[in-house]
Amino acid sequence: MIPREWRLKPKESTRAQLQVISNLLGEAATVVNTGDPDREGQLLVDEVLEHFRYTGPVQRIWLASLDSRSIQKALATLKDNRDYANLRDSARARSQADWLIGMNATRAMTLRGRESGRDGVLSMGRVQTPTLALVINRDREIAAFTPIDYLVLQARLQHDAGTFSAIFKPSETQPGLDSEGRLVDGATAQGIMDAVRGKNGIITSVTREKKKKPVPLPHCLSSLQKAASSKLGMTAQQVLDTAQSLYEKKLTTYPRTDCRYLPEEQFSDAARIITALSGVSGLEAVTAKADSALRGPVWDTKKITAHHAIIPTGEEPRSLTAQEKELYLMIAVQYFLQFYPPMLYEAQKILATIVETAWEARGRMIIEPGWTGNPMKCFPAPAIRIGLRTPARRSHA
Image 1 (cartoon, helix red, strand yellow):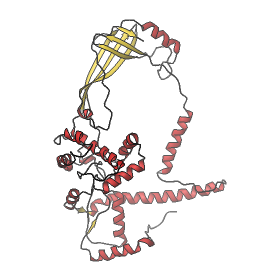
Image 2 (image 1 turned 180 degrees about the vertical axis):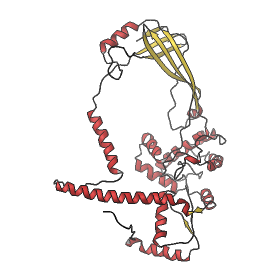
Image 3 (image 1 turned 90 degrees about the horizontal axis):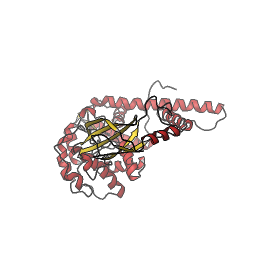
Image 4 (image 1 turned 90 degrees about the vertical axis):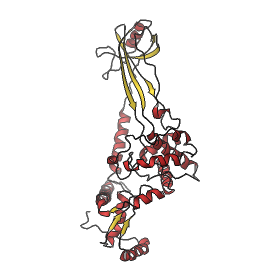
């Protein structure tokens, strides 16, 4: 079933309000589209204007947050509503595709199911059906998976600079390996351990490379849901509802975003936000060392989609529930970390030979902790391992 013409019919419950809008449109010299800053918000307002065949000038206000400063800035930068036609068309295409595929496919599958004696509705959808297929296929892979035990040999090597651990690296011709190059034969493993135990070895290669671990980007909705689930035990819906509440309280920016970057134009707000929230309980430590002059890769307008990352607005949080407080701190800390330098470390790899067998040790030595040295970070600090320079002497398998 494909309609020749798409028609929208007002709900009975909204007719009175639509009449009010109709009257106001007749009096308006200019209309400002204040829909949510996304494609759905764009379509909702545009559909009303189309329904009443409004042809007057329409401007668009883009509000990523509801604090007074952001509202003033948005009011000063109104744009022609036609500039957002691509968002409207995208939302309309999504809506019509959902309707066409969901309704027609559901009806077809339900009828086919009834022919086979199956009662009830067999629901299908543009998104839900492919997603279900992914879940089913993965579940089948898990059910068909056959676990295979394999052995990892580790040696403790003594050196003038200290003791470190190395992992056995089998050659391609090493007996006792499976098709993926893993050691699976117990007798072979025992033979290797007996051969190297107590023997001297030679370090054949030491590689050092200075690297950076960048600051994690501010949260989008999905990353916030993942972090809050792991650290706070919140469900995805709880995170969305709580983030929406923080947004409506003008404490954070728009939550329904899939972007983790920030517009370059907002960089100038950083010092104000850091200062405004420096006295908030739980943010004292992270704001104390935040450098508002530090400009990281997060500031990239070209990477902004419909919305930017979720960040605090700078309004002082008050009267929050325990859950709101925890989620607010998670959002704020992630933002303030953008004003910390990256972690600098030296990645190290040591290759050693013991009785004609190869062993490898990997580790890293932190040079500058950067953002990882902040006690309020939302990620665990990387482990520190000792790097060695010269030959290993004795092994303990």
